[in-house]
Length: 244
Ligand SMILES: C[S@@+](CC[C@H](N)C(=O)[O-])C[C@H]1O[C@@H](n2cnc3c(N)ncnc32)[C@H](O)[C@@H]1O
Image 1: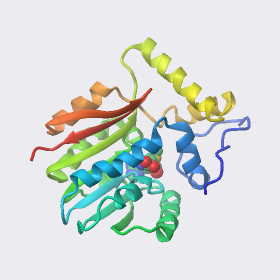
Image 2 (image 1 turned 90 degrees about the vertical axis):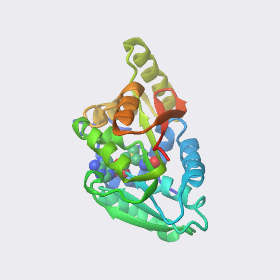
Image 3 (image 1 turned 180 degrees about the horizontal axis):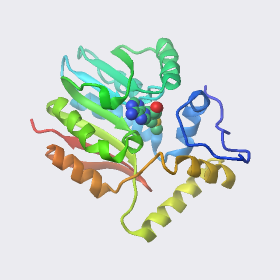
């Protein structure tokens, strides 16, 4: 059970840039469920999709694994496939919590936890690569290369599952979706102060892109087709297919 997220509940003299530190790790499961519309569905379906596309004796990657929710969801769908899940995060604190959860979990697949920058990790013999809500934290100028590395490391017939907060090209639509997202957070118990301070903390850290920008990048990397398999407000999940 994680603690309730109240990191931004009291007025801060100066709102620091958001980082995945020990304070965030301690409340992360509560924070992400109350902040990301559809999070539980996306995680559960990540497992289902991984089960559909996993190839025997291949690797499944979870890039920016945080506390391992996507990895654990995949675990229960990879029976008898002799696969490894490679879960990577560059936050020592997040990965330490992930390790504690993993050691208590009933996970039948091999899970390797790697504390590294996902920009520095080779992707090899991959049938499924999951990157849920992480590309948005990667510097914009390094995103093309990361997606290319993923594409190159996927086996034919492999998939990338990519979930992101998105921006809308149309400014009015974008503003409406941000407002609706804030209403969603209020409905989940966050105050106006919490929403506003968290927004400031994420301002230069989480940089969303439009669906068109994601689709363009995936196509340029070589993916033959991309579908939006889930969307709720300004959060979307894509599946990108590598040719067979
Ligand atoms: C919003 S969380 C991802 C949530 C997680 N995928 C899930 O579905 O529960 C983003 C994670 O990406 C990690 N991260 C951000 N930049 C990274 C990088 N360059 N290399 C590795 N991990 C990174 C953060 O430490 C954080 O744990």
